[in-house]
Image 1 (cartoon, rainbow, N blue to C red):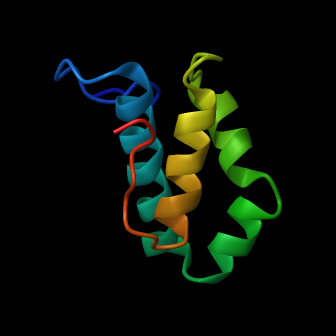
Image 2: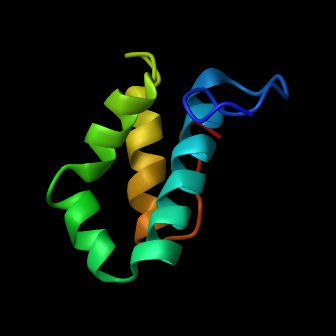
Length: 81
């Protein structure tokens, strides 16, 4: 699995991007705690992470939403499912 594009299970690109972003968000929360949610969501950290990971422009919104949901411990809700 690639951090920028997600799995290769044949799911739509936006769903795999969401899932990859969600996993990154969860890891950030697990390593940095609750304060990470504010930094990642309000401070634009998830957007910065998506750009650094090279997420394609079309998949970036789903990836960023996944990251935000993961870091805030919101249950995953893949877009378009």
